[in-house]
Image (cartoon, rainbow, N blue to C red; front, side, top):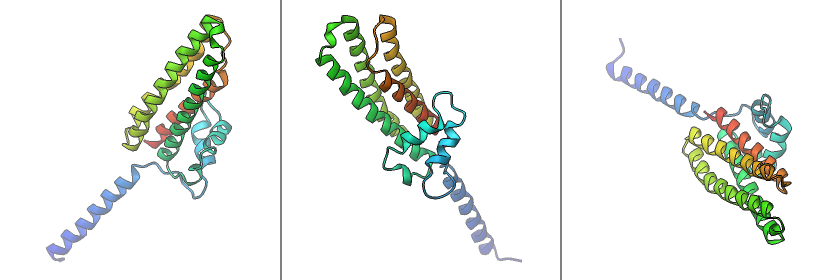
Length: 190
């Protein structure tokens, strides 16, 4: 019969093994080594109604961290960063449009000002989303990203309601898809 101390140490080792297995299993890693962009995009973009695999690949590959990303959390962090970059450049473009004569049409100016406020909200929200992802609060981050996607649609909707052509349709479409991409990545990070 084994000595009680050896039973305890074997039990302790087994318990430690189980704890470590569970702890490391909570981070959904992408299988394989090297560049994981294609398998990740096939997983999250294959059935998406908001973006396709090619959009996912081309978007994620614009970030220098993509080749070393190992988990869906890593890729979601990249997508949030890309959405932030989009929001910064779109807000700057809207500001430039307003300065360059957005006032020639009151409806267009009103829509641009509304979009400017919506993009500022996206920027504020993205800081919270990035922190939520770091903290493993994926549901909270996804909710913020869904709100950002809705805000982008509201920006475009404002132009449609006013009967004015939107000068930021391409940027809005891209922001919407990136937000939805980030949400899809977070679903697999759980």
